[in-house]
Length: 321
Image (tube, rainbow, N blue to C red; front, side):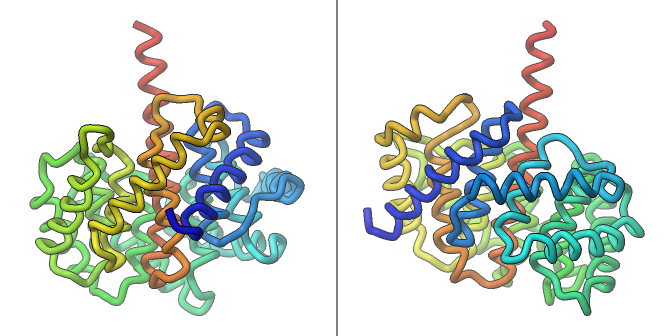
């Protein structure tokens, strides 16, 4: 494995250790998600700064009143990874105020505010959010049972696309049809959101995405058909050869499996070295990606955390039987 990937793995493990020592919320996937927020920016998590940023959120509880639970750690991490935390939070407040004009309060609205504060210009903010609401409504009209509050995040990123609303929705629908039955519909819908940010034709994008997936299915390891598919969708759009991407993911996974510190930190069957390897690789390529592709990295954080919530509820139902 080359020096860049080795450094990325060590950075991921170091951040994982620091973050898991601060946020003890019982959701193990929070740690790699937050770790990757710092890795994508080439930064190392700092315990004091993270705690300070967490307090900044608490101090604004009247503004972010609906904010709680599993979103707390990643939002604190996004703020801590910014260059100026105070200025970033002030910008978040402004964005959140605009979002509240269009969407109902929720955990996802605060996360959306953090991501938009990072990726959208002030002069276009109102227009982008207005467009995001239109796109969200179109998504809900097409798939009323699959579309919910977490899709607000996707809608805001789709609103940054130069493609028309109809082009985006038609692209997603065609990809959804092509990928039907490849995985659970919730996961496929997320994949189609991400693929729609690429200008390529749906047939080509879906073929490339599936090719990358099947390259990660071997006798030794198999990439799970779950929320991690969104990471593969993002990687499949960056223009690199799938054979190279699959080889790098496998190299990173092998490195992680042999690292004693990494193995000791794992605490849940949901965690998977192959998924973590794909997350790390996405962070490695983030600096060279287009603005849309960089946004995809942030989208995964939200979706992984949404999956954690579903996983937690599933465990409760099993325990109640």
